[in-house]
Amino acid sequence: MASCGLLNALVEVAKSATLFFGGDTEQRCAITEDATTKVLHDKCGWFLDTSAVVVSPVAEMAPQSARDSPTSVTASTFPQTNDRRETVVVDSAPSILQLSSHALVLIYNTLTDASAWDARFLRGPRSRHGERRLASTYLAEDAVDGWNVVIGAMELARAWAIRKTSDVAAAGNDPHRLDRNTRIRLAVCLNLAWKFERSAYSYFPKRFTDVGEAHGWPNVQDGHTRELAFLGYGFLYPEEQAAIGDFSDANRDQVKQLYNTMLKLEVDLVNTVPVFSIFTNNLQTRAELLLEQFHLDKEITSAVGMTIRSILPFFVRIAVCANLYKTLAPDEEMGHETLVCAASYCVATAVPTDPERCTLDARRRPPLFCQEVRQRAYEILTSALMYTKSTYARFGCYGDPSWVGHVYVSDSTLCNARVALRSAGVR
Image (cartoon, rainbow, N blue to C red; front, side, top):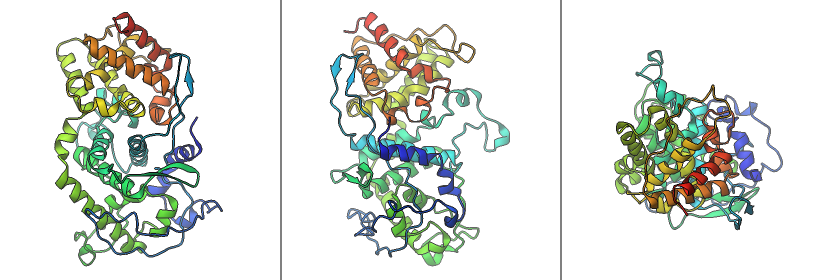
């Protein structure tokens, strides 16, 4: 159901290991005629950010690869009508926030799939210590965002990366391409979010062998990863990557420019945005605290609470698609309750197709919520049915019927949850 640019991007995600750990560029896929697009007129235009960055020009280099960047994000499929609502829905372009969030989801998924970032829930600092069973059972999928990295990066993007100058334009087969400045800023946001949550669990290859003092790097004798620049490189499209050249030690000077640029942006982000409060007090983390309180009050079991948590990012995506997120996010009283309410009713009304795989018992009655929260949860569920074919909303496990938790976000469950809310007095 995806439009062409996004479909290509999703296919390329499966091949992402070659980008992050692949060997010779000569062994990669051959360049097609369509891929040999003209070199950018302003080859360092995506470097420039007048608020923080001044860099030297980038030398023109030959294209290296025809692969699409994982951020080749285009419009999701929006249904014209939906028989469950009996209303006409106007097909519209995705917002900058949706494109940005989708890009963050794609890159995060790429990095964890390639084992560049370790998102497992370990019991200790080494794999031999084993994994935390409850967290691994419910939060292991990348889309579930168990470490709150994606939601943290998205909140940073709302506060800093997405600006009045952010733009979306058509380019090639991609009708909705984010401007380069915004994409580079998204890379900085994602990098900082990962550092906050899991800084010690990055495993990028140390491809750069120089002792860095002469080049502005730290003096690391055993090599560098240039991880921050690697993220920025992954957010670029093929012609932009070609303008820089290959991400390798042989192209050290160009990579250094990219790294220094992004480092200045990262410093600007830390200096201008309250990053700690954004990471610890956002819509998803407040929802987690509410679930914890419900568990302490014995209103839900640990299994029910973790199942509800596992589908919260799905409703965050729905809120972004339906342009409801900007209303829910700043509402510290009922925004997070709305998401928890919608997810709770889905867990309570789902009918597992495979009872043997169902990890829940019969104690799934949703907690009590006020009438206004139930009303807003009903709107979220209605929007979920409207955008049920959205590639962004369904990316990852939420679109995979084989995932054990898929039943809780299936169309039939979303309908059941709406019926239950209407029975609870919602009109």
